[in-house]
Length: 159
Image 1 (cartoon, rainbow, N blue to C red):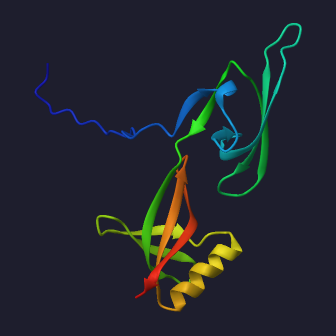
Image 2: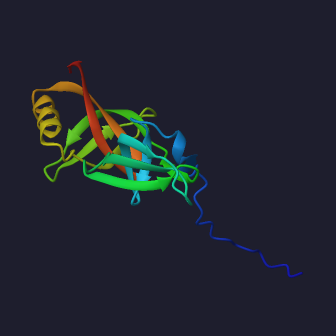
């Protein structure tokens, strides 16, 4: 053995997995599922009967939680589907920059500056007008599969 010091670059993510498996037959409406590598909220589930030589199949219709696009998938009901780990976190809004990025205050007092205003025009307008009117706003950020987006707004009164 040599006396040299070994140095390893640890590039692995120590956090929890971004998805977990769940049997397709147990996924219901309003649950989350990964369709075509996108996190979706299930809006419709239909199950077909087994054929002469096959499995019962589940037909999922989901809405992408970030883009709002409709996606569909058909999976044998006995197989596993990926379910995204979806989290919601509230942050206080500090500032909105000219290029559309928001500055948010985290629970521990740090700032989070890597999020844009939402693509939803109505929510975007509510945040912008509320901020410019001097209101104290709390935004809810939804995150799944390494993506984050502002999805809701709460007015906690004037500053």
